[in-house]
Amino acid sequence: MNAILKMVLQRLGLGALTLIVVSIIISIGVELLPGDLAQEILGQAATPETVAQFRKEVGLDKPAYVRYFLWLGGIFQGDFGTSLANQLEISQLIGKRLQNTLFLASLAALIAVPLSLLLGVLAALYRNGIYDRAVNAITLTSISVPEFFFAYVLIIILAVNLGWFPSLSNVSTDMPLWERVYKTFLPALTLTLVVVAHMMRMTRAAIINLLASPYIEMANLKGIRKFRIIVHHALPNAWAPIINVIVFNLAYLVVGVVVVEVVFVYPGLGQLMVDSVQVRDIPVVQACSLIFAATYILLNLTADILAILTNPRLLHPK
Amino acid sequence: MNETPTHDQSTDAVAPRERVKRTWQQTTWLFLKSAPWSARFGLLVIVFYIFIAFFAPVLTPYGESEIVGPEFEVWGEEFMLGTDNLGRDMLTRLLYGARNTIGIAFATTCLAFALGSILGLLAATIGGWIDQALGRFVDILMAIPTLIFALLLLTIFGTAIPTLVAIIAVIYSAPVFRISRAVAMNVVVLEFVEAAKLRGEGLGWITVREILPNIMPPLVAEFGLRFCFVFLLISALSFLGLGIQPPTADWGSMVRDTATLITYGDITPLLPAGAIALLTVGVNFVVDWFLHKTSGLRDDQ
View: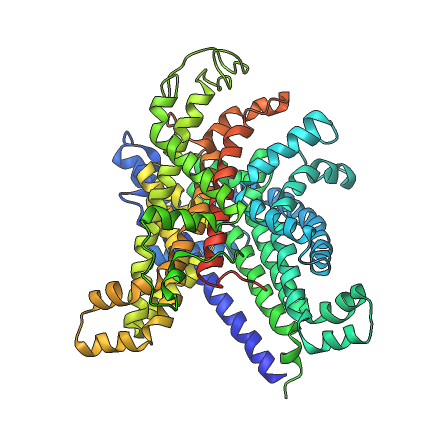
């Protein structure tokens, strides 16, 4: 048990270190700007006095490391600073949008994870057949296709021609849950299409890997049905890689929302970030980057740790 | 998965009979004949795109950003695929888009490879603290999601095309560094490298003449894969309005410009999106085949 604890702690430490370095990169990135940030934002026409005033307001007159700690300290108290574009508190801008984004990502995960597990197990069961080859081709295709292509195809089929779902998802947090799910369904389905193939393929690979091992052959020789062998004998040992790939794809989902949110005009964090990049509202972009990056890193860290914890060989050391 | 023998096996004939001499056209033809249908399809797609990219000005009826008709004209005689939101011919822009989008993505990938593989090779050859430092730095770079990192950097540096190319090249040089270092590590320990070191060859000779030729196949395959990722990322950024800027014709921004048509059931926006998808699918098919042929790198069974 001690070895596991040590490995988990190591990973946690590494994760924390990564987070800190990434936060430094995000906050200090502005320093790399050729010229002066204040001048850049206010434009060439600004007088030296306004520039100086602005620098003071945003805190640019302080040295970089002081600003970094002020920024980080603020974030721990839920204060992300103020937006340059509209002088609003960033935490206010972000609050509901973050909820919306998480809602979208979770809905997509709720559809994608069971679906890909099922399809993956089926692919392992009927491997080397037509179904299997189709899975292979579809996987290659789906990692090659841009998200917005899926999104617009879904809109044309399900929203415009069939009229089942709205093509714009103007959700808000105070909607009844059912309506919210209904309006979020198309973006969630798009995200599902993006991640499901990869997860399915990895599930299949993880199970097929095990099917060659002696204890599976033993089960085969005992005459156990194929489905039972896969679900009861192979799957428990395949959990580690499968969980890993699921969490990895969840991390991808969190980032993949950006494009999908823009297509469906979904009021989420990704939309906010894109809008802010367009007007070069640096504090908002920094805040959004930090949230996205932190979520991504934390989910990958979870994948790492779960992989350690579910590995039967590590759980029962000799 | 094709057992047809390729040209390199023709040399190990047992009998001392005269070696069959083939011209390079014949060897290429034999090589292509051994390809599965998916790879042939991919090659066909790539050749088609390259052709269009080179001959766009000849093939197109109008100028790249010339306004030739009313906005959102439907498909018809005069404008085969209609016009876009400013009244520019869709077909013309689609063809020019091949040139711009693929050209920029290709340049970016080349830059990423130049940067990543040189650093990777150096890290593998020199080792020591340089290797450690570069490795940890790349770990950090890769911990940040690509799209988010690109958005952050574009905010800071602006969205001019050279900046875009530089930013994405730097971001993607990280995975290139990783793979080239990993494959070079396997070669560095071999005897002939040791021999070259003992001969007193310089660092440049060892990396370029001894190691590089031995790691080419995985690097070439990786180039194909990375090109797809770069291409998709640039398209996504253009679609978000942050990549290649108007009036340059580019598939990502064309989808964005004509997106409103989708709500009227018009599939015009799907054309540039489909053009992106078709090329990446084609490249992926070819890379998949190439990997099967050269190594077991992607054999996940």
